[in-house]
Image (cartoon, rainbow, N blue to C red; front, top):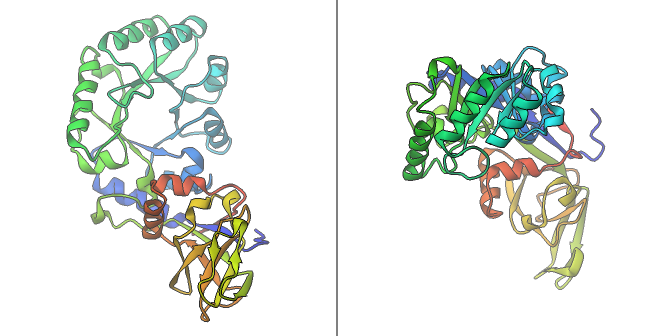
Length: 356
């Protein structure tokens, strides 16, 4: 791979695999481990999917049908659940490519059972236990869906929900209770998979006896509250110093001149910008050059940004825009967001360099 502007994301595939292995080894009382590989594996790129599987994930999940079909081109044998809602006209594609479909409303189930009653489709039913995004909210709705699908060839393989605030025990226990209440009439021996725990919930709460699936998301990439797992960094974002400008006191930097040199200063120009996912709000936070922190200054441009440096920085020195797990967490805190967003913002214009 040619890295013409020497700006790239370095993805450590071995660490992804080993992280998944460590998680499954410690939380080993599940039967199904869903590797959540949506959004290009949280910005890591599709090549990470194979390492998620090698680490022990035995089911995959995506947000969109496009993502699922892209993965299916190369991986024929593993099950793939689409967590998002698939328009009914594309159900034949799902059947043809063995994509498991989410049902999140009675209306969707009614239309599905009418139009595709002879389909050999696998579905998971989504329960809305409190997040109020997708899913059904009552026991009666679930029973109705189950009865509708009894008259078809469509197979209910799973029933799941999503915990929206795992660090809040009261909210989480309410969700657990609601989920159990909604599924209480269902014959659990006829449903192969029940799953509700995602990355944080897995580590913070014990598993219910009848729950046999969990979903591994950002935890696979090293982000967890369970420090005993000793997970490793999987993502590093690197660029280079392409020019050094010597400023006099009072000189301005970048669009709108929002940064003014308070003394004679050195400013490094780095070829990465908001078109790559380093949004303008990053101004003021720090990057690493030669192991030392330096601040981003001035308005970030579409394709370049500015860093205030000292005499230790030379032309062509590596600039670590995102160094490791801790730096990504620091960046997320500075941006008043979460590591998920920091990673997913890094665009496809940035090449992914895979190391093993």
